[in-house]
Length: 271
Image (cartoon, rainbow, N blue to C red):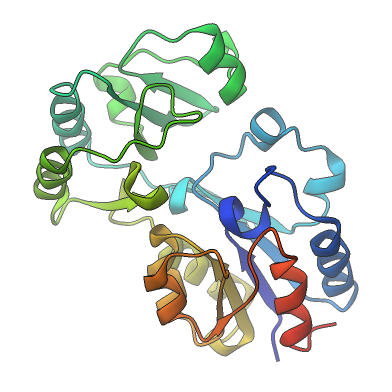
């Protein structure tokens, strides 16, 4: 019997308007009424009030969250960061600097962000960042980086693919030292600690809850979800997901804009 659910956000629980569909809200509420615990497992930072405009309406649907691809966990009575090796962060920053229009952000404790370019009003507003959230791009920040995001321009609205030469160099830098994910159909890269990752974080929360692998279900759509999808016997890929994720999942539901979450929860017989 399924006793806990773990949801990716973008492309999974969120529709293309970055909202949780009403059908999914109703389904999650019914699951929690039956005693099923509900958690986030997202690449996003925990700043969902600022970035998505969440209020108690959304936060009350969840028992906790895994953020920054497992770089930060706030669930099952635990708050934990897993930082990327500082030398690896430094090498990645140097690699990205070779490409004029490719940028990066470092996610740090206290909702902090460091960028390798000068921010502007559009970025600050789009990311929901306040001046007090900004951190300098220095050694101290690199030693407390839970996640690195590499992207074009200001990220918002950009769909250019990452340069192949940069992808190859980043893969070489991260090999054996950090986890690298090429996501968003090749338009972004995400880096986390070897001790992070959604699979590792979900498994840690599962063990804290005293649950077997068969008692949880994970939901995802992109390549940073693949490790998690492959690791657990009950897994759901979104209809809009990457082909690798859909091939690895036990179930494939409808797309995120087609009430895919509600459909999957009903398909699993949870409500």
